[in-house]
Length: 183
Image (cartoon, rainbow, N blue to C red; front, side, top):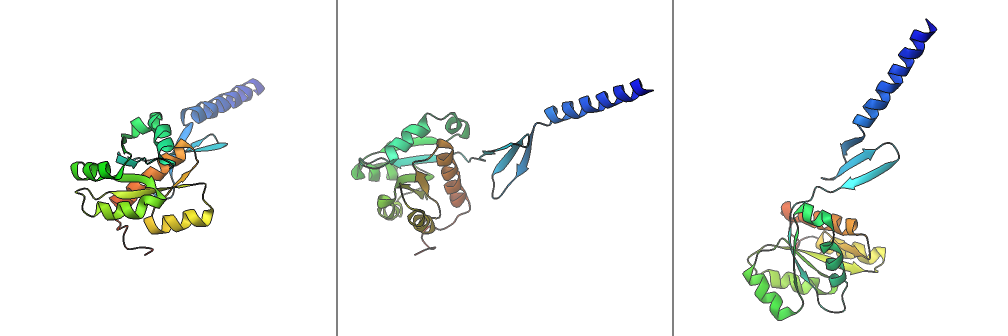
């Protein structure tokens, strides 16, 4: 009788372990359109529900943007997300590129963001400006985010950069007017 109970207990434990392994990563929805994977009970990993974006990066010298673009272009998640990067490093070329192509996001240093917004008014695509703040205080980053509805904070990890791109795409997809709030 005791053997049957021991075997029964082992079978139950084995079934629980097999079920835990089979159900290992459990997906749950978190705030916004983000998806959280619960891996065991120890760690969370955020997987971004990325919308493919055509991103024009204004990579003028002395800004953090060229470094960020370089980091992002080497990320496998960028290709899996379907994001495409295009770069331009001078204002005259920028006007030509904006008139010729359609872009979802314009990645630029926050000091260039206002000027780019004005240039976008005559562009065929209704792109959202994603300003980059580098080594900023929380208050500075918050002010830029309030004005543009999204911000990419650098230095940071590539996953944080991809999250900022996804947030900017959410702003674009929701049709939020980046000209009204905070001005």
